[in-house]
Structure formats: structure tokens, C-alpha cells
Picture: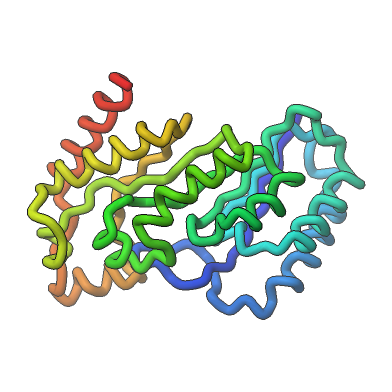
Length: 238
């Protein structure tokens, strides 16, 4: 059995912490899809078998693909490979893309969603320059479940701190309380899988430049450690 990963390097806007390869210019998206299909054909003998048990669309933001673009890619995959009937087919998505209409379009192609929520706390989302808000963070999971997507994973970021990041417009909750609220929401939404990432400061990002200029303070390792350990204990208990 084999699996393939397909990278879709496009985003609506740049998150302040991200140094992945992507572009916010979507003009070449259709050309990239054509190139991906051609690459699948050219590399058909690369894998040891023509049978696929996993297909994963990462990014970037693969949920920016249209129904016809996804159809073009899957037509090529199904022409060259035998996709197992129970294959896990995952697409990474941003919450603001997951409307009821979009979920209907995705349903024939994929059976697992990886949703980049990052936080349910509005000030953190604004600081990170995410394209969605806190309400969409919650609603997109419920919409996906109502559309028949039970196999879900959500991304959360720990190591966040209003104090260190200079966020002043929110509640008086501590960093630990805000992280606890994110975890409680993830559990309450019955998400079967959580991918948690420590906020990492990369040099060539907006966050990296702000720290270099002294506008914000670096992430505290002790805070990240406490939040990580609390997450492990809380999720194990739930």
C-alpha cells in the first residue's frame, strides 16, 4: 500500500507566524492543478505499488480548490492508481472556507477534514492574521459534522500569551485560562483528533521581525511547557 501528499501552495492571506511556501496570488492556481496532474502522470512509477490507501491535500490552503479543480486531480489519480475503497482522503481547510455549500462540494472527494482553527480566542486569531474569526472556529466543526464528516482533526496552537504578544483588548483571563478554554471547546465539539503546535518564531515572518524590533516579546519556554503538559493531562482525562 502507498499514499500520496499533494501540496496546494495558496492562501487568502499570510499568517504572521507562517514560513511555509505559499502565495496569496491565486492567478496561477488553475495552472498549478494542471501541473500537479502532469506530475502524477510523470511519477506514476515512483511508488512501489499502484494501490493507494491514503491521499492527503496539504498547504497552503487546499480548501481554496474549486470543485472542478479537485475533480481534475482525482480524475488523474483514479486513472493511474487504484484507490482502496476505505482509503483515508484528507484535505486541510480553513474555517472560513467551510460553508454548507463548500462541504457539499467536498463530500464526493474526501472523507477526512483537517481544520486549521489554531484558537477559539478572537484576539489571538486577529494577532495571527487568520482569515476566520472565533465564531467560525466553532461553527465550521458543527457544519462539517452535520454534513457527514465524522473523521475530523483540528489544529490548535499553544505557547500563546496576551502579555508577551502585547494584546490588550481582551478579557482578564490568564494565559493558562485561555488555553484551557480552547481545550474545553475542542472536547465539547467531539473532535476525534487534535494536532497541537507550539507557537514557533521563524526569522522571516512578521512575528520574527516584530521580536527582532522589540515590538513583542519572545515565547516563554516555561509557558509552552506548562500548556503542553496541561494539554496532555486534560486530553487524557477526556
